[in-house]
Image (cartoon, rainbow, N blue to C red; front, side, top):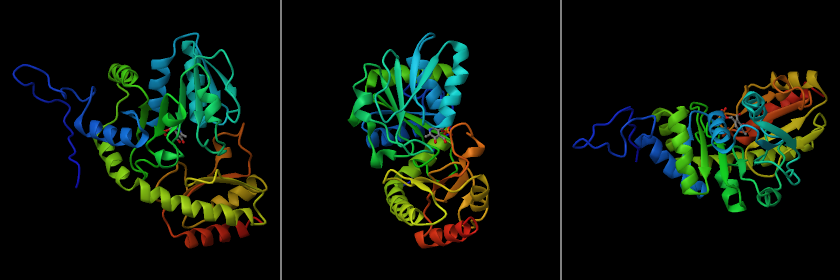
Length: 322
Ligand code: PLP
């Protein structure tokens, strides 16, 4: 059954009294329905935002004050680091740490990513949960199918719903899932005040995407596992970075020239950024984050194409790089 899409920004009062929906910046029915569905998947109270980065901004503003320090996983999505560098102007500090170990003491927030994009490291969830500060886990690449961070003691799950959750490269959207209802209420208030809100159309695309999340992610995982195995055996590939689940992997070839030949040599796999959609995408991440990603690293987001066709495409492109 299709969910209704309500694009209204205002709803009539009833006998002079505002109802549960009165102005769309506060809440709208399509968004609330999508939040209910996502909250169920992650086991908490979900809130939608204009993008994953918008969700991260809202969390930072809600949880921190000038002078506070965030312990940020050094492998976290590079845009999260860019955001915290931007927020330095408002007195928010951050320190980078290796998320495979314990976060440093003396910080007011811990921020981890499972698995990290594009290096695919997994955080030590138990060590993060043991830290006295609240813990945010960006689980964009894992999805609730593979990891439910609230069950591991994290306080907030962050998703770029642009990726697997919506899943079709046609909706820009973020979400935070909160362990506690009162913190969700505070975050919702901040969302209304700052206006970092999701549009009904994007929320509707998320609702539709969630209906196929399980079958998409299962298929993407099966294909990624097979491709990771084949890549490991290929003479042109030096390292395969894959945590063993999910549809995202990275692999390293000899250097920038080889990576360029491969990313421009595929026909089925689009040479494009982003991840988590039904169509496979691959790119050298060095172009965006040269300070931490080796020139030969290629990130591959495995879509729903037949795995044999994906391997044929990769094999031909890799042959040019040996
Ligand atoms: N977190 C991760 C792990 C991501 O990969 C991304 C985007 O690539 C984001 C957050 C930011 O999400 P958005 O692009 O929806 O703002």
